[in-house]
Length: 517
Image (tube, rainbow, N blue to C red; front, side, top):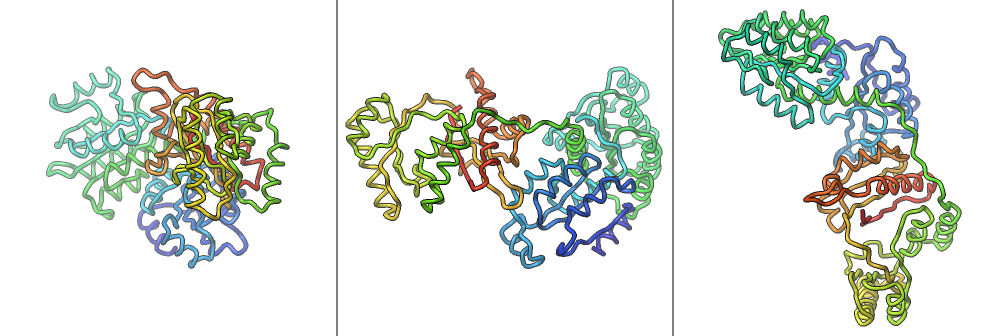
C-alpha cells in the first residue's frame, strides 16, 4: 500500500481515498465500493482484490457504481499456485477466475491483468473525457511507432478513419509535400511544436475522430518540451481523449512533467495507449447500455422437473440418467430426438424398427457421464443386426470399464439430420451462482476450448454476445454458401437453460453437447 501511495504521488495521480480492507473481518470490498458511488471527489475507482465474500452483494454494488463512474479491478489468484497463495494470505477463497470475469462483464466493471494496466487506465479515466466511438487518429513523427500503433488499434477492434477531405486539404497546404496525411498522420521527423499543434487541432475539429494517440520520438531537431506544452495547452479544452506516447523519455524528464501537469496521460509505448482507449470505449459503451430485462420463457413444467430431481435425491444419486435428462429437456421446451430405453438387444431392435433408422445406441447409466470417451456410443446404426451388436458392445464395454456403474441397458435414439454442433452448459459457482457457457460443441470442445461465459440470468443481448464471442459464430452465420443457423431458436434454448439453473438451485452442473443447430 505505501509503495502505491509513493508511486501515485510521484506520478501526479490524485487520490481521493486510499483504503486497505485487510481480511474483511467486518466491512467488505462491496461496502467500500458503495461509499464511492455518490462521492463527487472520486472520478474512477481502482481495486486490487483476492476474493469476494458475498457474490450477490458484490454484483449489485459493482453494477450501481459502474453506472456512475469507471470501476477497474485487478484480481489475483488466477493460477493454481496463486489460488493457494491467496488462501494462505487472507484465508479467503480466490474463487473461479472464469466466474469473476463473467461477474465483471455483468456489472460493467473493467478487469485488468497487471498493476501497470490498472494504473494506465486510472490515469486516463482521471484526466480525460470518454471516447464516444471507436475511431482513433494516430499522430506521429516516426513511421515505425505509428505503424505499431495502428496495428495495435486494428487488433483491438478500433477503427482508423481518415480525416475529412477539407481537413486533409488544409493540412496539405500547411505541411511539407512528403508528409503522410493518412492514418497514421505522419508529421515527419523534423516536426516542430507548430506542426503538432496543427495536426492536433485538425483531429479535434474532425466529426469522425473520437480519440487521439499522439506519438513523439526524440530526434535531433525535435523540440520535445515545446511539443509537450502545445499538447498540454490544447488538451485543456478538448472534448476528446488525448493520450501521448513520448517514447524514450524518463518519467522525471521535463517533457513528461509538462504533460503530467497538463493532465495528459503518457505511455511508454503506443500499444499501451491503444489498449487504454479500447478499454475506455468498452466502459463508455457498457455504462450507457440501456437496462435490458431478464429474458424468461413460459410453458415450462417445473413440477415435473422437481419430481425427477427429488426422486434422484431420495435415491442418493448425484447425477441423472440420460432418460431423465431428456424428460427435463422436454419439460423445459427444449426439443430432443426420440429416445427410448431398451433393456435387451431384442427390445432395442424392436424400438429401432418402430422409430426408424438410422439410430444411435448409447449405454444407459446414471454413473457414466462421458459415454463417448468410453466407446459406449455407436452412431448411424441401420439394421436390426447392427442394433443387436451395438447394444451388446456398449453394455458389455461399460460393465468391463466401470464395473461399479449401474448399467440399465441402452438408449435407442433417432439420429437427427446433420447440423452445426454447439455446446451449452452451466455450472453453479459458489460465489456468483449459475455460470452459463456456450461454444463449439461435439468431440472437439475439450481440445479447442472455444467457449464464452456469462452469469445467469441471461438477457437476449447476453446470449447473442456469448455466441458472437466464439469462433462458432462464423460457422453459424454460414460458410461457403450455407444458410445461416436458426439464431432465434438457439438463443431460446440458452434462455431456457438460464431460467432452469436459476430456478432449480440444487442443480450443480448441466450440459447439452452437442446441440444441433
